[in-house]
Length: 522
Image (cartoon, rainbow, N blue to C red; front, side):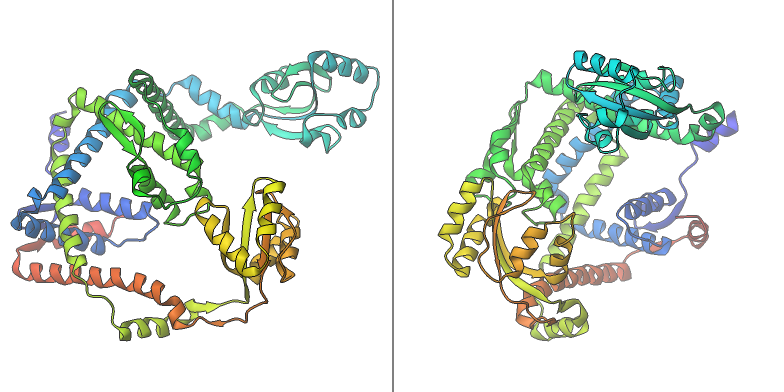
């Protein structure tokens, strides 16, 4: 027991020292895990070198007084609140629940129990009882299934297929696992109406299967329980704070990412004297959509979800502050302060990067010529409307290709129009039954199309003649090249500064600790 206690309080193994900073094996493991979560493949030497570089930048940043910079202090304050909220969540909210044997068995049987059944769904319980009577008298299931409200079973003569317990509505699952085999029974109240079912096959998960899956079930159950506990707790916080979200405004923004200053400053929610602005929401949207608009990740639904996440985070931070967790952060806060200084110094260095020269641009273009090759494509403009009448009015307004393109560009910020090049491969994909064959045909005519009904709404489109494949002109891709080169030059300045600092600093790497680390799995 004494030995176990001594081991538990043993000093962490240090793999490198940079001045007063210790880089531990656990620091390296934590960084490696973070990089792997981003889809990267780090090496142990690379991880340790990165941590050494950050320690050198931290010392230099502190020497320059960056820890007193207002932006750094604001970043540290925000991180302190985030860390306190996370510690509070782990220490008080999530620690309140534990996975039980009953939960594990319920999860197991949700996926291990299976039935194969027939199902017909009708509008009312009375109709279901009449259906049951007809089937008992010999009416053919396939004939009755033609009128089923469930499209899946109706298309297959009543065959609902093989399903697990979790794939069935709760009421249907309850009935399917107790009703006598090969016998029609019902009615069962379902989302679409009332069902009559017949079980043709049934199998229950056994103890051997449960034992084999127990470990994975426990991991999944813990994640599920944590999510449920957090959701329940933040809902209580919302109700107590009486938070209201301006969903009407968020919906009105559609998929557009641009916004005037007044909209950016607009509060979409308030928590006490704090406000969540539309600018705060757009930061999250930009991270998800990578700056692109018109897609799913920049839609109003995503904006609303992100706004609620910001509200929940603010409520958790306030609760953590009130519970005193902000004063219990210790080393994690010190690390946050150090990281903020490192980021500030790195940002200053990157800002000094000179713009790429013309020679740099041409070299980049020539070395990556294959990336700038264009396939056969067409220049297209399209507008999307919610109603046929609106689409027809827009078509009348577009008397030529240039006018349509102008309309498309004007409607672009709302996600209702756009102009650009469309590859022939994309048109081929639209030609498939699961795509939009009518739209693809309209795009190939070269004329202003009639209104085309699509899954998204009503579309008017016009495309030009196919443009040949070939290398894009340098001027067309210059903005992309400049965007790619500037960060690289900034990163090079950071690397150069680290080299200068390392030459003057006391850096000691423990070769044995690094060797032990290098032989362990990433």
